[in-house]
Image (cartoon, rainbow, N blue to C red; front, side, top):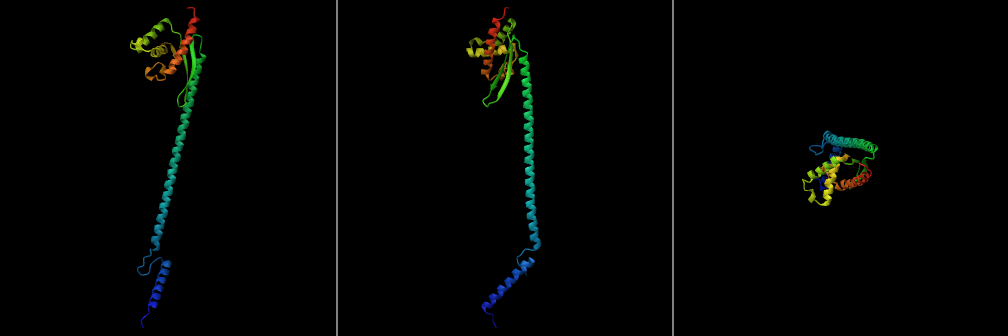
Length: 210
């Protein structure tokens, strides 16, 4: 007796249900099914876990490297700060030494200058009154600095080169850039100091008898 259409469909559904049950319990598809073996699935899962573990270790190593870099930068800043403090102390000691050794025969003044960035620098200028021989040396410095053409310069430029001549000859303690024309940029500071010195020199000479 031939099976009806309904019976055939019922048997197919029953067979499919049995196949699903076999896959769920064994991990294998019966007779050519497509389910992956349990061992293959476990291997893939272990590989996935290993990849995640490697990523974690790499991230931890990167964090350690960054921490070491930060520690190194902090250490470098500490060293630089100590050096700056040490240099500042040495400068202050030198300035104090110059000021303490002052007498009536020397022009001594402490200056504090600032930059556009707010940085401050202190220095002490110490100079003495020029003798007759030193006045001749100053005039020769002026001639050398201007290549003998100083008389034709503007008054402000004449004062600048004359000031450098004074700093070179009678400057007992002046910044290096006061005497080196290749390093002189803040001519405003240089001329301010020179004017202070000229004012002191006028008073000093008025008190001298010889």
